[in-house]
Image (cartoon, rainbow, N blue to C red; front, side, top):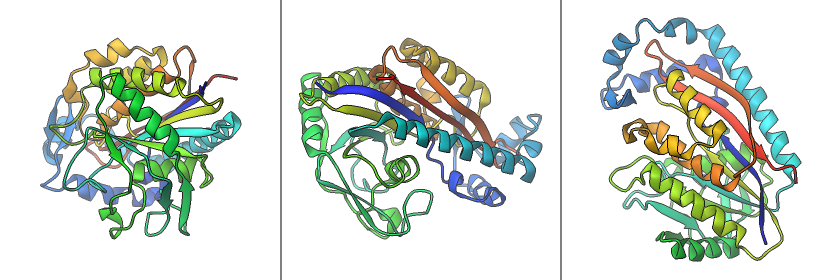
Length: 325
């Protein structure tokens, strides 16, 4: 039977591939009249958010010197995660991520699993997400179909994604969404094992799954992987949050404590309005806890990265679970 021996959760922010001097460019996007940023249970506009958080010291925390220090910390953390991944010697990977209106433009499935043969990455993807030359990686349709069939028995109806829709962010190419490209490029160094992408709609109502439903999904996913009748080592990886696009260290501390203690009830009790915008990607992390049940979490780094006086940015957390087997 398949054995889940490794789990990981890392951010996939574009600023991990940008010179820190350019981070304020995203501040301009934060200031847009069209952008609403979730903080303390409701959406905010930039000006009112800056007023609300004016005593937070974010001018200093987003200074050029601080941006450089925090960028460097994140790069060290990424390298440690790459090494942990390499040490695990995984045969097949299950990668949890989401689409952000890259490939799903006319519909928004709550859960989808890619059952195709191949995964594409490369130009014109940004260098933080893609290599400089086109690459084709093997997917694992056999495991993907097994997961769908097993999850159906557990009460989950999924979308079968057997071809990559055109990526509208990237000139309608068939390149994988950035949540997956980051993992295969940054963590797996463009040499992934056969893998199964699992897509969850974190961002867009009304088809977002609730946190309790995501917890149920995690338990069913772990059972499905372990019931696969192949003697292979499986790694499960999620990419996304913590808090963003408003970085909230207080809320991140709560999340990290719950992750360390694998407190699923604690996650379920948090108001669903916390799980909005990029912070909703925490819903991708809880299945890792069930897949790695009983294995302690290694927190490599937590580094809040700020880009404005309003405290916009992202709480970057890098963590993994290694069974030692």
